Image 1 (cartoon, rainbow, N blue to C red):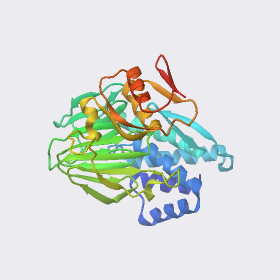
Image 2 (cartoon, helix red, strand yellow):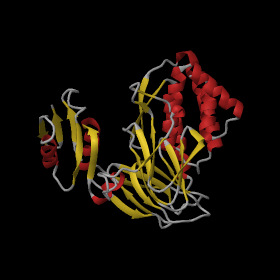
Image 3 (tube, rainbow, N blue to C red):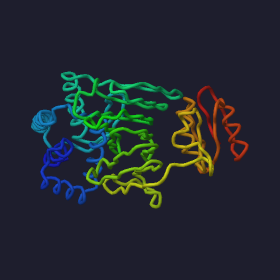
Image 4 (cartoon, rainbow, N blue to C red):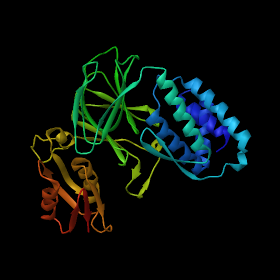
Length: 349
């Protein structure tokens, strides 16, 4: 990756790029698929580890200086592409070549600047558990299984900003002078006071927000100028997977889908998007592979398929209080498959 490309990527992520540099970056990525992929990896890493109270310009200057030193020591020509695992705060991020060194530098810089400011509070839930808590501003949050919410104590900045990985239901305390903003890897959500659900798991192709009351403004991470205002009972879905072409797409090419929230049955009062709050796992014409991922989080188990021929089986139903064995026996009544439970692992064949 060239020094110039790295420079404008970091400036773009830090919000310091000029319009000309933005156009230059777009041109590079349109001409070079590798550069486009590198940018996407950087954007994902930045979204997971960056927060506004970090001094972006100082961090950028330090990283740029260190990269110059590395290139003088090793020589740019010696930076051969390779896939390197980089662990940061429990995540495994795959990046290539110079990007591996850059990510380590960014990670170190982020850690340093965080340590000089108010530390972030992190709320976690493991697989198989949920948690409800109040934020300092009076907002009530319920985290679904295998989720994480990060925020600064007391919301010291002008905005109340939180960072979500996984799924959560928010009942936001109204404050017109201090908007509440939720950042996920695919969308940002801005709200003054309302109740809504956000689902954004890293191993799923889509992120969605469902509004129950009030109003929220949603924007796609890579296209912040495009705003979508949701009304009660509406849902917005952002997907980076094209089902017609069976491949991933860049978020900058994504067109958010605006629909309505789903009821399990017609004239039913149970909303599928928030049924987990009532300890109900609901699914409607859902393929086995997708349902298995949800069941892994729900029951804190590992589910694997012995072959692909059962992944496309489809199910509709509600699980409430069943053990994992009872759940699979119930599914087995509607579709033909075999399964084996070994401790906390279920094998489907």
